[in-house]
Image (cartoon, rainbow, N blue to C red; front, side, top):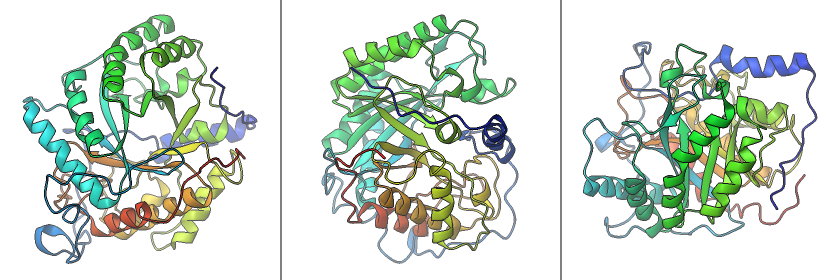
Length: 408
């Protein structure tokens, strides 16, 4: 029988209002940048990263040293139960001109090679699905949603290379801009109709996950307003009948630290974008303290049942104050991003957590090229040598994982 996740004593209303309200003030709800979104122009005089040929540092880069040939795609230390999940969120939107199956398999191979070079053992494939507006009862695939058949092709590439794989459909926010534009605030007119529609959408993707022996299927992500609804019991039971891996839920950080995550799953991830009020010059230890202060609101000590399912930060000035700000583009500061990665990795290891998935790699991008900061998201880490080295240092550390440590 599935057990409910641990309880958290509800904070006083005033504290809850401040914490939950903060993301909207600071921009910390993890909204995604979409091509064509209105974004501030890049600040002139952005810092440049030390670069060698092709925009990388003169040291060997993770992507270029992953393997001696494209045929040698094999994770160095494949994940086993009890080991940390060292991974990346690979975000995949279908292009307007649909790529061939051959192309997507080759592209998956390119991303796999890059991740192997970083020392990753896990990958989560995130992809969008759509809703008409915040009160709609109908969910559906859209032009940007990969088909289940194409998802299988991509998952197989990663599985064959030895990666732990996660399937993570995520509600796109593009149609919510005029109606409190965040997935965590939707209020379907009929929740029963919403869950029925969601079940219909998920069914072929659950089959794709099962057919490729994926390890995890994330049944929902950052759906604050629907957490605790009885509809999840039926949906999760249905998913567990069709899918033999673990069924998980990824909570947003504000709900995680302030309330009970009342979801009928045994596996909880946290999309963690904790704001830390320190200057850009702050040492790593100050960032570690900031993270621990947030996590201590939930529980102190080890957190062996908790996975950092998504986290990241912009490589730019001022990002520590609002790490989940996916839209603003301030002056590039690669050290800010690298220090954040080092701090998060230390917290995960110190508190015996299950691992990290960094946001993000875009499926169609070439991870071996330096990002064009005139158009690229500041959260991109591929092609930023300081960030790549921080990730590789984390992923190749001697942390053995949470093992069977007791829950705190």
